[in-house]
Amino acid sequence: MMTIQENISLKKYNSLGIDVKARFLCHYKTPIDLNYLITEGPLNRDIEMIILGGGTNQLFINDFEGVVIHPINDSIELVSEDSDFVYIKADAGLEWDKLVAYAVDKGYGGIENLSDIPGNVGASPVQNIGAYGVEAKDTIHEVHLVSFHDGSTMTLSNKECLFGYRTSIFKHKFKNRYLVDSVTFKLAKNPVFVTHYGNVAAELEKKETVTLQNIRDVIIGIRSSKLPKPSEISNAGSFFKNPILPEIEANALKKQFPEMPIYPASNGQVKLAAGWLIEQCGLKGYTASNGKAGIHDKQALVIVNKGNASGSDILEVSHFAQMKVFEKFDINLEPEVIII
Ligand code: EPU
Image (cartoon, rainbow, N blue to C red; front, side):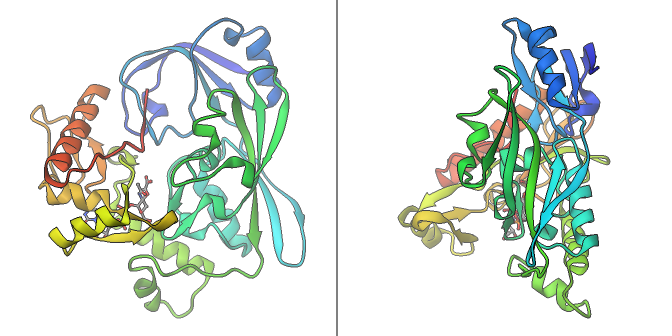
């Protein structure tokens, strides 16, 4: 029987540490739980609903008067293998980095660059999480879903997920229609290492050999030098997406700001670094006047809760950063964090 809590604070369920209440918090383990919620539980009426995984990418502004579904299933299973690949099925509620640690320990390659990303496995296809030249879509084989309509199960192939930069079908067409129950990853027995991003290669040179474990260690080192740990400073990772512009617009900006980092993106477009843009506006380390929220002093893409910030305090800082970047660069920053 699934656990359902009523009128409960979500403070410990969101990494920004915002103290809002949920009308219902339902701890999901199996498709039977969702079936129960739909037929007899609080979902059998017209009520708002959200899925909350690790809560590392959500900003709550108000109490949520609906049903919050929080997956807590957390097993890992090797479902099949051939001479080159293993197929690992991981439950949505499993902490993402536990899956990475497992894969690295077993010598399975493909997700080691995604070490130390906060959040749970269920968000990996939704967000198409990415870091250091790798995205979840590169290894996601299938996504296993449960329907909010009738509790039936369904599996989507990688192609059917319509992955893009920090997006997928689960953010638009399938939003609130299906719950991600588990994800099957296709991992390589003979890994091809991806080391071209930033200073990954330089850091690896300090190690004797390039191994999955050494890549994982280097990436954890780089991340912890820039990104605040939510357990120490409440935050939701990158608050904004890196903007993607047509090449012609990016080139015009590059003429004006020659030191601006640019990266090739798909369809001949160019990706800019939102953190750089925000830093150029003098906002790295910024603190709002009430002292409760601000911008991280080592990575300007991260908005931090400096103590008892409300959702609106965080939102205000984000609007301020958006305004400054627009004034200086004529670019609209789009939040990566989902605002609820
Ligand atoms: N930069 C600055 N100032 C800053 C931040 C960045 O000048 O305050 C510059 C850096 O020097 C670098 C460039 O911007 O030249 C890119 O910075 P970085 O490599 O730190 O990555 P990012 O583009 O800021 C993205 C992801 C991160 C991911 C890193 C590493 C997005 C929105 N963010 O950040 O993902 O860890 O690349 O691959 O795509 C997340 O999504 O929550 C997240 C942390």
